[in-house]
Image 1 (cartoon, rainbow, N blue to C red):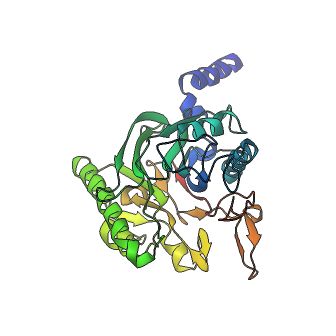
Image 2 (cartoon, rainbow, N blue to C red; image 1 turned 90 degrees about the horizontal axis):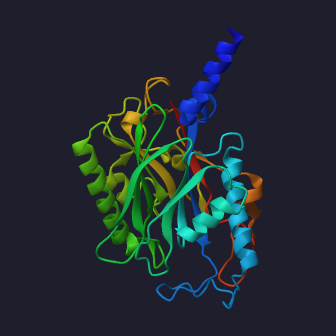
Image 3 (cartoon, rainbow, N blue to C red; image 1 turned 90 degrees about the vertical axis):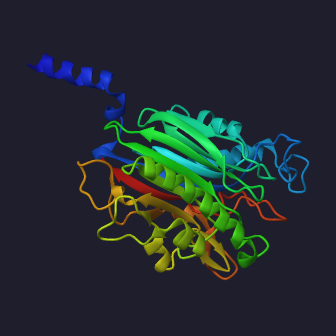
Length: 338
């Protein structure tokens, strides 16, 4: 009998590596992190990366590059050191080589992460990307599409992954137009970003009303701004969500005054939006996200005390000085139960 039990355990581990390594209690995490200017040190004449070269005014050296990547790896592993995030979406990454270095030459090496990044047409060359644990989620496919037609900006990355129970997640990684030049002056461009994303999610739900959609990103708008609340239609979480409705999992934290970046005061630009079919169920009946729905990762070592005494994100660099910190944004994450 003892031999049979051991054989069954061994056989299950061989035929179901995804299920065997999925994590404690059938949980896995989706995270998002705007890493603030994750450039390599190589000059790319097709983009404006002149501020991130060894010869720049604030020299971007190999030493500083690897310090940056090791800091990012520290954040990813600290979100959950025993059950690493299954998916991490990123903003402000220059190219796929940066993600490859992150996953093969830092403490993330040998953790089973696979990288995805498609180049957009942002003038600075910063893109959104993703890493996912291929022993936890199965890759189905991905694509990228321009988030706007009237101006050059980052693309939206669309990735399809499936878990061991064959739930497919449709993941959209975003980095919408910044507020540089003024929030109201740049709002029309974020509205265009929102309309583009809405078109794709509506099309997906029209063809598959049961699609499980997870939208993540730095939207450069708050949850109650027009782009997210009205155009995309990302509502506050509801006790009885509709399966095809979109719900902003960061709304409640925003209403409590929490934030992910600090400029004069806290802003909450980094968010998760999901379809209602991921909410309001009990574990064991398919993928579900339980309350409190979403988290801001905010350990003391990601922060520093500014001139007014406020603990704020510890940046990599400012316009005139290298600080050696992490990012001007804090990471956010959700927990999926299955």
